[in-house]
Image (cartoon, rainbow, N blue to C red; front, side, top):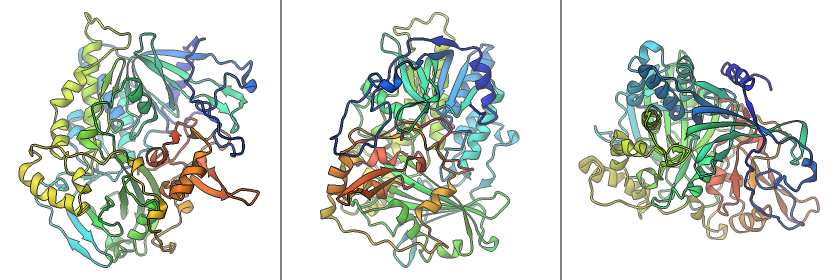
Length: 616
């Protein structure tokens, strides 16, 4: 295994001290066998068990194990803030706490994508001297604009003080760069960072509490058979495991079911955000300007909008993007093409004309807010950040709340780790104090105050009804209304059959402002080893054609922002089959969320694969 980044040295040093674990826990397999007439698509071991596969007979399946006090899954703002805060507290108390963090990207920040307009509140708490430390917050907001788009015009909307969209005091950042900087701070404090290692499995003690995680096996061929280079994953055991996988984490999904953590909350609802980075004409560059719009090209019943931020990074850079709520109903909606169409609006063209696009990416984001927060603690584990969903939707911000959640988790965990008289009822520590601290924090107050804004968009006036609601009830009452509105339900349940909807005719890209999908994915730097089982797994290989294509005209070929899914003709010439181009995947999780059959299960590919974003 080749070193993937400067952090990887610690991994190789660690491997020399590992002890073998001969009886590793087996991944529970989902049993499904499609009709023999259906082309085989899924070969991943989570769907196709290896126990009865003769190709695996005699293969050494022992794993190595390492012990830590705290293991953190995910090297984003939440996970890194938790790691940093744990080490700060340990240093203040002169205690030794071993903290290990695993991140599936080849280097920290490579899978990070956000607008991003950062509210620095949590960063200020974590590092009061962040300016002196050189945190990459180079662009304070200098101007704030909001508008409603019609097909030809832009209607300005004033941003009054106190409204969620007010960005006074915030900074426009390239979040991947901030994450990389946080990684440097964590490393300097003694956090062991393992980039390029994807957490693939949750491990459990015999009493049912979480024991830690295992990274994924490597060296498996596309057909599911072992290569000569096959190696089992690494086990990391901890007293507490912090899960900060980001939006719709695949381990979080398992834990929700294992501990029934969503029984008292509403289903999570999501959006997909697409982003590009451009270099524009310097004469049009206005460093610090923040612009948001709603309206065209979406109809009023499709939640979404745009952002356009002018960065001050030494060259005339702008970050622009488009967000579409995944509760949309028309299966012909294509978020990527809506984004490309938006760039041709008369109010957007002047900024981009003559510019050069240098980056592209996409990710899903949580929109459920307060109503959709699950139980956050369970024996041996904790959720932080976008994994449970702390995003403030009307603000379009979640980094500050994610960081604060990680800090609160660290403080609650450290209190237990430093208690010499602690008696735990389970082997994995349960830390309910974390959730108690959250309820007393500014996160809880902030999310509660805006809880009704997103669901208020479900009325007859759609998005505009939500704007009216915000103006009346949030601006005046600050979220103190004595009711809580509900979401519509799972995003996967919202699509109407194709026969009941009108196909959408999208204009062809002009190669100047708008572009095709594959040239866009190329800018993301996405790469996976093609000779591995597709990590986009199907519970039943027959469902895509028999249900998704037959009823919804194959919506996965439109909602995926990377061209992973396409229906191609069978060699016989009769009918179609689903082709999964897993190497294109940008790890946005949209397919797992929006699939109307809930047949797609996203799991981690080999560590180090995926996008290679540079400060998106």
